Length: 303
Image (tube, rainbow, N blue to C red; front, side):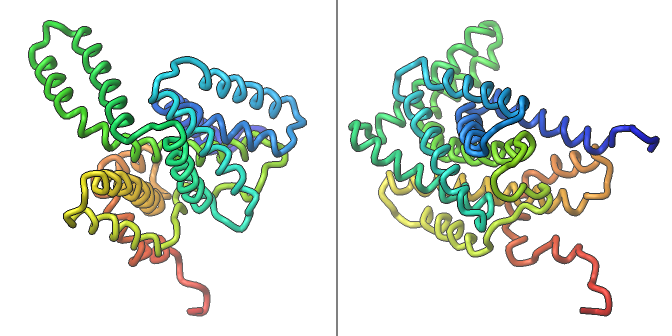
C-alpha cells in the first residue's frame, strides 16, 4: 500500500457498519438505538463538533419518536424504548460487565417496568395482543390493495390475516431482539463517535459470546413448552424462546465469522447466509465444544 493511502479494510468495516445502522433504522423502532446512543453520548461529556452533531441528530430522532400516534402499540414501543435506554445506560456504569450482560439485565428490568406500567394503566395482555393483531391486519390489507389483480398474492394475504392473532402473540419476543440489537449498535457507534467513550470498546463480531450457563435458561424454556401450561404461560415461554433462539443464532454466526476470518468478504457473507438456518444449533453447540478455542494455535512450548 502506498504512503498516505487509506486502509481498505477500515473503509469496508466503516461501510458495513453504516449499512447495518441504516438497515436497523429502517426496519426497527429507532428509539431502541437512538435513545441509548444519545444518553451515552451525553454522559461522555461531548466536546468535539462531531460529538455535538451526532448528539443533536440523535436527540432530534428521539424527540420525533416520542410524538405522534397515541394508540396502545406506539405507547408500548415508546415506553419500552425509554425503559431499555435508561436501564442499559445506568448499567453501563459497571465496566466489569460485558455488553451482552448489561443488555440482558436491561431487558429484564425493562420487562419488569412494562409489567408495572401495564398494571398502573390497566393494560391487559389481551389488549396488547389485539392491538398487534389489528396493526398486522391493516398492513396486510394495504398490501392487498396494492396488487388487487394478483389472485395468488391475495390468497397468501388472506391466509396471513387468519394467522395474524398467533403471530401477534410473538411480537414481544421479536421486539426484545430488536431492543437488544439497538443497544448493541448504540454501544458500537458510541465508541466510534465519542472522543472519550464510556467503558471498554466492543470486540470484533467473531468474538461474540456470553455466559455458557445461560444455556440452562434456554433448555428450561424449551422444556416448559412441552408441559401442559396455561395459555398465557405458554405464550410467555414462546416469547422467551424467541429471545434464546436469536441469541444463539448470533453466536453461531460469530463462530462462522471466526472460521472464515481469512476468507474474502463475499465468501464470508455467503457462508453465513447458507448456514443461517442451523446457526442457532451451532451457537448452542459452541457452549460445550468451543469451536473458536479449537481454532486458536497451540501455545509455544506446548503450554
